[in-house]
Amino acid sequence: MSPLAERMRPKNLEEYIGQKHLIGPGAVLREAIESKQMPSFILWGPPGVGKTSLAKLIASELKCEFFSISAINSGVKDIREIIEKAQERTIFNTSRPILFIDEIHRFSKSQQDSLLKAVEEGTVTLIGATTENPSFEVISALLSRCQVYILESLKKEELIQLIDTALQKDEVLSKKNIEIKEHEALLQISGGDARKLYNALELVTNKSGKENLIITNEIVKKICHNNMALYDKDGEQHYDIASAFIKSIRGSDPDAAVYWLARMIEGGEDVKFIARRVVISAAEDIGLANPNALLMAQTAFNSVHVLGMPEARIILSQAVIYLATSPKSNSAYLAIDNALSAVRKTGNLSVPLHLRNAPTELMKNLNYGKDYKYSHDFSDNFVAQDYLPEKIKAMKFYEPQNNPAEEKISQRMKELWDKG
Image: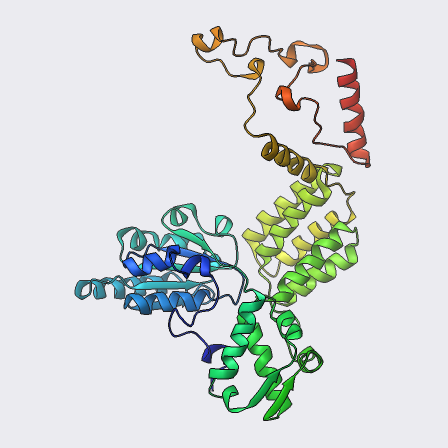
């Protein structure tokens, strides 16, 4: 018998739970379905929120053929074969077939390139599914031909609704007398992932061996603790271990950082996902305390892309240890957030006249650029003048922190501006 998650896959839009912002009344995908004008698009969201189910339901609602492949085990040859079949079908059928590609972020550039013509000419309607930001993982040429729709983690009430529906309608569970006394442990295990929720519910009901079962948090924890996967790269631990990894780097603990790196690698985590987090950490947590950290992280990111596993593990280890042992500063991170906050509060303040560009005579006559002082004409290539709008000219966004590199920055800025 198929797993509970597969048995409970919705058969129509009315059974689909969640993502009301996309398929609720008047929502963008609902209107596209009703008008039968479906664009190619990419569904971006965490695991277990209904990307595959939604794609299948759209094909069913539009009464068009549905081709499905996974980027993990498919290549250019598979794509071309499906496109050829789609071309044959469209000769006799006005409905464009749907090509659903799960984990489209795992396709290489050449594999994504092979989709372009079919998408552009309308041979197929492409629906891609990804857990990664499409801006990073999907080539710009393909991205420009697709809409991007963001799916959200399922809310508490939606997860409870999934449980109740399974107990009432599933061919196995509905025959048992099951009462959910406490939901918290099941919801915690799910992490907003319907698939993990169903797996946990099925595990508890199977392991208990009882026809009359009252499910409590204690029972769920006892049964699931030793039976759920040690590392689920598509579930809650994916985010928990990534969080522990980043916090260990931030906390200057190279041993812990390498341990969590090893956990991710051993669990089959995408090394590009790890490398991206290393780049983010270098900018957010090390920052100006050691600017070379970002160069190291970017080099590691590029090398991982070129080499892949198993060599990528060595590159990542070197970069992670370097970051973990570097001095730390989040001053750049705080500076841009402070500046963004000021922009949102003060609105569209005018650029001071002396800082404005003056490419035409009219602009010069309006005093654009007048009295601007060219820094390189002065001693130390510096001259004091106002660079911020008048209303906020006294505001400070960047505050150097207490580390050798930024202490030098702080001293230099003080000497320049005090002299000015």
